Image 1 (spheres, rainbow, N blue to C red):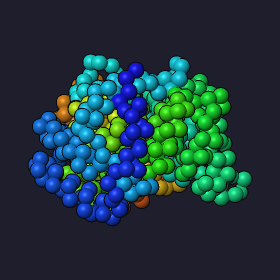
Image 2 (tube, one colour):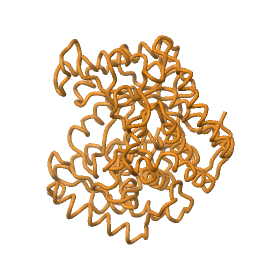
Image 3 (cartoon, one colour):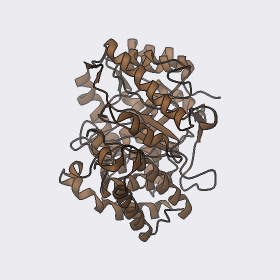
Length: 470
């Protein structure tokens, strides 16, 4: 299997000790932001209302070129040394040329192989390419096992981020860097592995990165009883275009262990990355930076509104779809995980399913994995459930059945946005919808009839809109 930059890690990471000295404030205000604005203007990249799923390849070419130039010009700031890591264009091109064209997550019969997939490509494998479920936010101790089971029992879900925040173990608060964090991670991984065995999917890939500290993740790195070689753990390019020795150490450890790593485009729209257009350019630079510094197994799109934490707003979907598509069009990197990874509304609401549909339609059309499962801005207690991930997969399958063009997908998403975007605009969407206890029968761990009624109502309305969802 080819590798883009793994053999160059020592050289590239070492540039964080020798590169130009740049303090963080100087990097943000005098290096990164001015150049980002200049390049976005230079290439005529503009956001406009109604642009959600990209239909103009020339616009994607412009976003790609601007993002690549941004990384070449400003580099990545190592905040541990306050020096910039710089690359040449030849180094970036060589890394991209040598990237693998497919990756495999998980083990045995539960493994999933993820290839690169083009836009509107419905003839080279199933649509969607894969489905990711995600558990995020605070989860009650008495519910974690049930919530995790609600994902593992869904046959359409190929890959799960079994995350969720645990606050104490044996009555003792879990503090980052403490032995209690290490104990909690061992307990967490044991519970997840038990659930996967119980549903007959022992090799289902787990992408859950719960601890704050790497040492806690390392405590559960054991292929016999802990993190398996087919599992996936995170490493980040921190906003915006920054890294540190902790992130490099994560990449080093998990590559050495033999497991997979994932990373995300994470522009904060309205924050340091600016508006939607500049955020899309930043997103391409983010994804390229991951390739050069960490070579993750899997990449995803995770932009969010900085002022109202939404992963599914019209702005977030624009950045995810345009930034992700620009990267995908110009590389053969395996398919990205598309938007939205978590919804703004609570899981027990129509709006939650509409948010999921808006993300999955664009993602499936562009050849990305679809995602779903978490609600309430990934901040509400017990706001996760497997039915949302199942729904994302069903929407993706319907996109493939309909063979939607990008134009049709953009039109459909724009018909869906009014179902929830006004509540994002007035900052109330997070107040809508109940949690796992209201949505699932806690004995059978099956969706309650009233929850299924909401799910089926949204599916019926999607069929009326022309999407042949089962």
